[in-house]
Image (cartoon, rainbow, N blue to C red; front, side):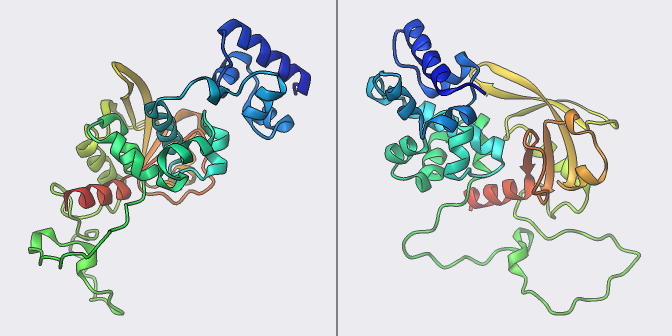
Length: 284
């Protein structure tokens, strides 16, 4: 573990090479010292900068909104949900306080990111993970839906069900998604739904196979930049563990329902039930 003086010497050395006070991200990438060790000695990055007798990074340059929002979006993607401030402090490049000041509070980040991501397909998977904005003002009365647009909420919750016939097909709840009338009830339904949504989610499928992992795909990570990812399909995310799949062979679990709370941190979760709900909300 680097000691306090080593960290200060590294900050001043990087500042001399860059000819300006480094940002926290520049320091971590050039020094090899993680944020974990930095925070062992200093309450924040700016405290460390001032201890090195340099001007605070924020006093030198105002970061573009785009950089702040892109970094927050990457943290959402990695976390599989909106990261609390303490999580973003560890996983993000910037101080959550900077985001809060820029966008009207840290709790406003989902709304700010939704506006930023409009028309940008590479962020569709992140938008699907964001909570829906609360409705404001008086709401119009809901129009009656036609039978082919029925959703699960259309039906009252019954205390008793009709007897199931063993000679008939069983379906999931009705959905509002145009090309899929019912929710998936198994892994095959997840595969089909992902194939229908892949383009909108920013994925280019290379191949689907019987062996592990189920799918090889590419996704856009920047302007004119794509990367390979390995995908495993599961109806529920915890099935990945129950099926005994190797942890290092998969980048993303695509599932209908995410219920694996202690999954390895490096495996992303794409929960299609949330994606469908987001699409239904945006179209309604």
